[in-house]
Image (cartoon, rainbow, N blue to C red; front, side):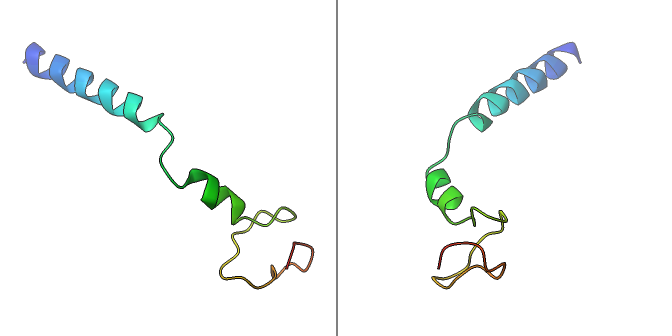
Amino acid sequence: MIKIATLFLAFMAVLGLFGRLRFPGQKRLAAMKCPACGRYRIGKGPCPCGKGPA
């Protein structure tokens, strides 16, 4: 039983390490947010808040 718990904790630690990696597309997702209100812009039109770039 202790062996199973140890393997589970080791597996969770490995998953945590992989979760810290930056996945491809993170910069693109950050660029899709409106700098004024922080909402995601869908498409190429202006943000609904009216303050963000067109």
